[in-house]
Image 1: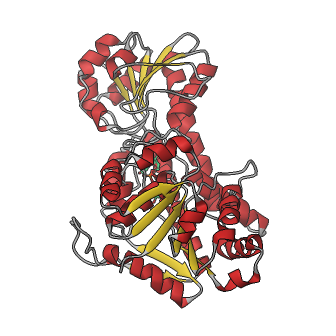
Image 2: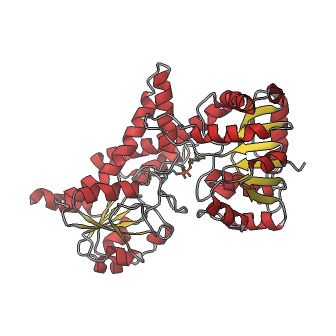
Image 3: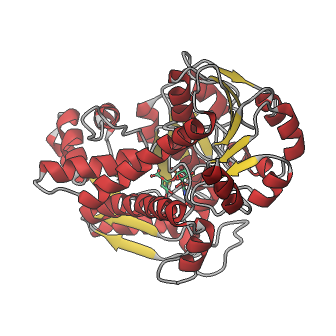
Length: 459
Ligand code: UGA
């Protein structure tokens, strides 16, 4: 059944939600206050890079099922279900900053004239659903609104770069609400995804549905991100062991990942996670736990290990080059992962900042990112070879597929030095070594490294 949906906030999550809900047959109106973004969206274009999103935006626009506005009154008038998709960044104390959510709730409240279900997509502190309904009721200034407002949680598990496919073919849909009517409404909204009956669906079989209460749904989102982050830190801790013991992390994670209880995904050791979600959410859990008198020791360690991975590359550069003053370091990859232009909490930027502090000169190439925040003196090159020109060391910071097929002999001849640090364990040590480069990975066993170590010991 076609629903009337408003989506407040047209960032990464909101734009994907708008485009996908229109694609599965609903009438969607996206709300965005930034005029430049609004113009792009009305033109059928996303204000950021995300695979397949522009096509869906354009198709939704042409079908007359998707529009964007800055007019909250209009959006509320034309909707029954209202998704809130605004940012909840970390505050300096580690807690989630709820000011954007407060602002949209207060802006929407006076326009509640018929029954609305507000659905939280943003990752919010546990208990925010109840908080949201109180904020709306107070801001509406009309006690009758209490009967018109319902609140639900529908956490999102989208990954940037594959967000459209994650939305349309999810592993599960989680819906939390304390009233059965909201639950039923949202289940109906998702029916085409749940039974994979929307046009162009390529996945057979129904998608599992978790129907629960508001707080449990909010907790599922945090627990999922905390677990994924912990899995990555676990792999990185094992990689440290491998380095010490002379074992190979790639084979170790393949060996444990084949155990169906463990699974192979999110076990890639390297520079650790970046992006806007994992650190923010795990930190929010640690701070909330402390506030309620519990020390979340596992999550504290998860964060600490991730932070250490960013120092690892600097330690290795220092070990090889001894002194970084005036050294040229080339970074391959700037975004926090492939498939996106997002630089938030990107390990590459952290590494650039650290080596610049040591006096190094940094050049970089990224297939999508063409500009960096002001104040970071990094030369952006037109390709990987140009970035490597005269470099003492090259660091692969993002595993863009293009880097796997580089001509490493050409890279080597562009460089002054010979060190290639594969911060994502995405290259073949044998191929890189055959091109005359010294390969270093994270916890990887490198052919010939035992021989080099023997030489080092003799020296
Ligand atoms: C993450 C979750 O995967 C989504 O399910 C969730 O919806 C989202 O956060 C969110 O809360 O909004 P995302 O940050 O887009 O999604 O990216 P991921 O693909 O999860 O990667 C996060 C980081 O972990 C990247 O820097 C990636 O390089 C790193 N990573 C990932 C590893 O270092 N090792 C791995 O094995 C996997």
